[in-house]
Structures are given as C-alpha cells and as structure tokens.
Length: 220
Image (cartoon, rainbow, N blue to C red):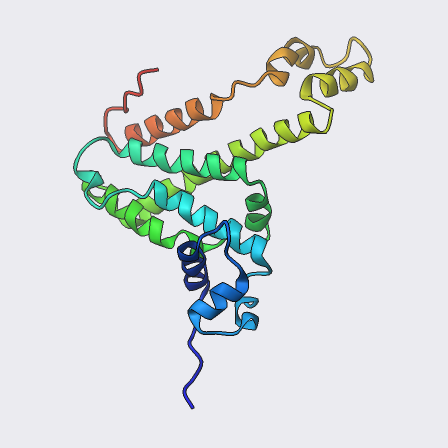
C-alpha cells in the first residue's frame, strides 16, 4: 500500500485558487489533492482562512514582477508595486493582520513572489540579501499604513470617528493642557490618505542615496 500524498500549504492554496475562491470547499480541495479533509486541517483552520490566504496569494501574484522587469525602468517601481499590493490587501481584508500577528501568514504565501522580486532587482545591482532587506522595509511600512487606515475606518463604522474621539479626549483634560496636540488636532483627525506613499518614496530615495545612486524622480 503506497504512502498518502504529501501535501503542504502551497499545494492547498494553489488547489483552492484553481477551483475558484467564490465556490471552493475544503472537501473539493481534499478531493483534488487526493487526501482526507483532516490533512487540510494541519495547515488551515477552516474555509475562511483558506480563502483569505489564497486571496492574498492572488493579490501578490497580480503584481508579480516579470522576470525581465529589471531590464528597464527603475527598481523603485518594483518596490512601489509590491507596497501598493500589500496595502490594498491588508486594508481590504483586516483579518490578514490577525493571521500575520499569530504567525500564520508566513513564507508559504509569498516565497514564490519573493523569488521573482529578487530576480527583478538583480539587474539593478541588488544582491539577494539586499533585496530581502528592501522587501522587509517596504512591507513594514505598507502593512503599518494599512493597519492605520483600517483603524480609522473601523472607528468611523463604530460611530466614533477620530474627530469625535479627539474632541472627547481633549474635553476630559484641562483646557490649557496638551497645547501642541490641540494645535495639531486638525491634522491628527484628517490624515492624508496618501501620506504613507510619500513616506515610502522618501524611504526609496534614501536607499538610492545610500547606494550612491541619484534618487528616483516620482514627480511629486
């Protein structure tokens, strides 16, 4: 009697994507892979988690750098494309943040993208370790921005938008307290949605300068 097929998380995610995320079930995935449903539970807790992970893989793949992407253009465009994908994915599906914090959003869902990312950077003189450092820096900024945007939206949906919460918090303090915060409260409660992109561009300009390159021109 042969050994049962060895199935890993990437196989499960790929099968779910092939079936179609709008209709996929764990039984369909198990049948397609020739395993029992119990095998799937070693890698995903339920259908919802599988769909989230698969949707994240699809989002990453939609911005997958072409293998010849490094031949033209600026390497900063590759980094910005990746950052925008992360921001959109995490802002659209906040549960991904929870999965990440619990350590369940690991290399399985991104190493294929990472390989392409590093390959696209090589023509620009990035070694794989340097490419990984850029990848991490961009990811931390984009995911942090998505968490902030999600927090603002969630507070608004709960009936406590930031301007209301700020007025309430300041009203509970002495009216002479926190003068600097009071003077900047308008900026605090009305954040520029594109501010994180400005910060990302500044980060990429700094990386270019540290590499002895002219800073990329983003037209801003």
